Length: 143
Ligand code: ZN
Image (cartoon, rainbow, N blue to C red; front, side, top):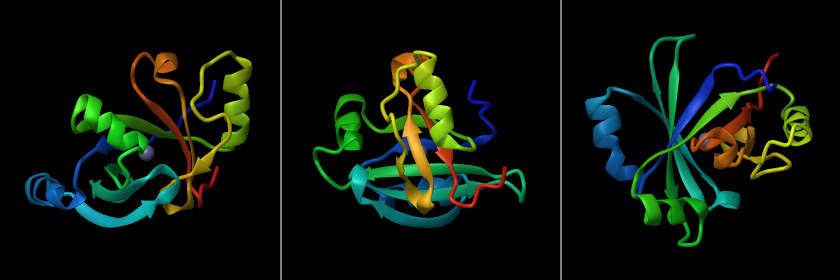
């Protein structure tokens, strides 16, 4: 068991980060936290935060930067929308080893680098009943 902590963020696939500002800021009233490019994954991500300190909900908008990136392919197939749920974990390498030993299918056998220097890894959607599931160990995680 990976003992997932809180939901770290919800990932949403979009064609254009810029086009989303009206909805996330203007309609939801979320605070724009910043954007960065994660070149490994061929995406630019923008984070929005809702809620008060200690009870924040974070949304990760993902915009493809390359036509052959996984997010570009996802949008091509499914359109824009819900992409993944990310759970905060500690010691992601051990968690992945436990999952692998338990026969759970993984997309990432070893963590890769996500936004904000976090270590992330995806489970195979078939292993999580159709919900693409990300494990996320924040760079400044305290256990
Ligand atoms: Zn994510």
